[in-house]
Image (tube, rainbow, N blue to C red; front, side, top):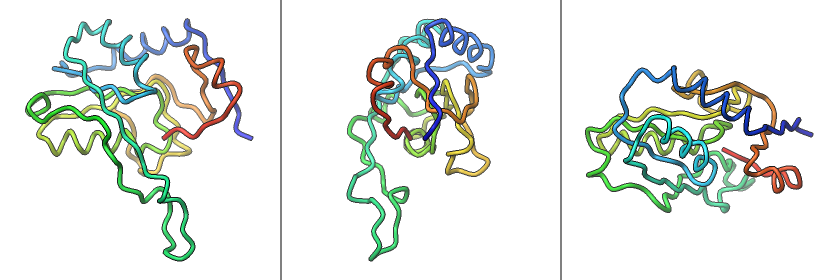
Length: 169
């Protein structure tokens, strides 16, 4: 079973304090990935005094689970963008993409690639990076608060997170 780590609000504050000095770009806006990025994105938006806050919601279809006949993996599924900012608010903008965790990296990489394709300059940011689950080789978040091999339970999800394990990407 995967090791779990329950974070306090003070630990989250320390991660935010660790992230902010890393930023070497002035951001024009932020794209928060739902649901995990909502709280850290809000905290970072307040500290950075960003007003252009946008939402991205991404799903990887369940029918792409491992299929013995076609021999493909759920990790090969194309993302479905449920919500995504319009091109006119992305083009020629430095966009900070925020999520809670980079596990496999699929979700944040899909958002990064879409922003880049729309003419924006994306920068990825997470509270935790798990290099042991990363599907993208040496690629990692541009900014991250800490590395971990644990399943992180944040204070805003403590009740739910300690009772059920779910797979984050």
